Length: 208
Length: 208
Image (cartoon, rainbow over all chains, first blue to last red; front, top):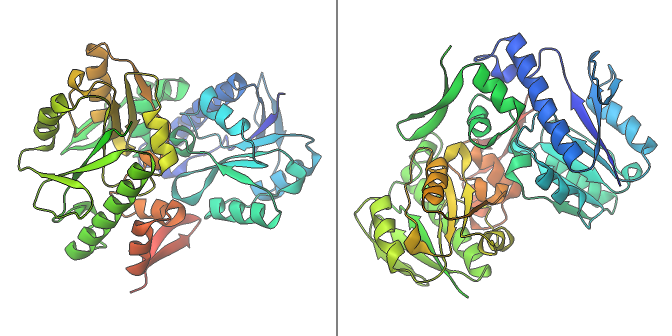
């Protein structure tokens, strides 16, 4: 079994909530590094990454679908075309590893969902994608639980901080510098970021 | 096996980083509710809660140790006295449940550690507590990994967002309102808090 893992990706001007500490080029560089880490974890867990991109983007090793429709429309037109288990995983999860993803794909339920920080949905794994549809943005985790319930689908909520930790805000970079081991952490360190402890609280500082 | 679970608890003026939205009495009420949820989860996972309190505090159902020494000194004087597996778990983990705690206590390693947000340590489980010592505050997760390494103890890092999510800042309350099911969530709802979606981002609002 090698289920597709659909990865929505925004190559141009991504992660704007990091604008206070990273310029556009740096944010694009970090976003690509995080995508590489997610792709590596997905492959290690025996899934096949497929990028769903908002703009033209070239990848040497994986299939790319470019679309200018919004994310929900795009995914909801793709899901009925997928036969068999299908995953959707966000591109900003640099702590993802094969072990955490295998916990998702080995669910005994119809669906496995990993909530993101602040009510988002970081990963959805569907045994029968044609029976489900997505509704991202806002408290999408609660919306997805409701959609599953209304469709009579059983759900396992996977309790993983590695897949729960999406990188959106400057303070999220602390998690990457502590728990990351891949290209994203190297990217961040290459940009001059290190951990800083200030009055008992941990943040990041940039040295150049 | 019913290992002790040491729970440090500050009953007076706790959780000061929530002061912008909760007064002292309300913070004390929420802290006690979170403690109740942690105690319930710990008991469901067949551990015996023991409170380590910074001030006088009465509990009808569990042993209380009151100390005016700092947390590290207190714990490091207690650990060598414990024979057999011992846990230290923070009191501000209202998403803790029996399943996540059993993942900790069923480790095959010498130690299991659950990191908190921002480099803290939320749970430590020690098979041989006399061989370990704690060093909380700052990036305690990294310090604990180093102490374990220097003592030649094997460590499993438990990948759980339920035990990773400590409630410190106003935005953390979102997690409690989404994923909580115990007394802390009821307390927060009783204080008038509900979820609010604003420009795609999820926060909390207080209605009274």
